[in-house]
Length: 223
Image (cartoon, rainbow, N blue to C red):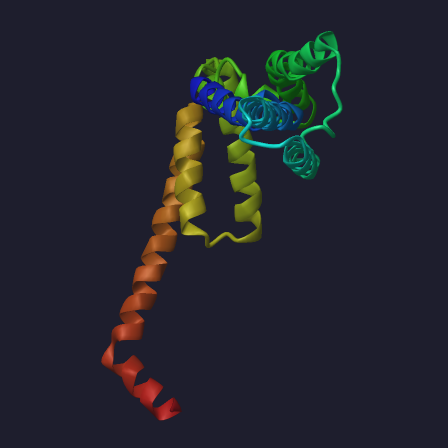
């Protein structure tokens, strides 16, 4: 059972780490925005370069070139490409490393935190027990002859007290006779068996009397 529990505990820790690591290792939103900003800026530069070439070849006049350039700058502003907060490269590198550090810390600490929590509020003694209670009972030392004799003497006293209250208890007389026979008190055991035989004979007579025709006729008259 201990191996199964440890396997389940490791599986649950793996699932918990998955929920923690996936958000941490996912690309930061700032990096995705910065990539979009770089693409928009590259497209803007290409279009400005094309306008410059058209102006050089005489395809566009200076006025039309200036108007087209103003339109491109307006589109660049509308795309939000130049609103990105440009950070130093070292700071961006540090921001990229922060999720990785947090993920490694979670991997290292989560199993220990889960184990400590279970040891505090769980049933660790039962789970990590080296042997089951059944095995402990099975390995108990057998009773000595003196202990068994004391138990039978105690049982004989209990039976004698019960028969003092109900002398007609057939089963108690038989059990008392067997107990006294085990204890070696053969004379008292024989008396107990004689009492049991007398009670059994009385019960047989009562049964026969209850089943006789005269008893049945008297029972009909009473009804």
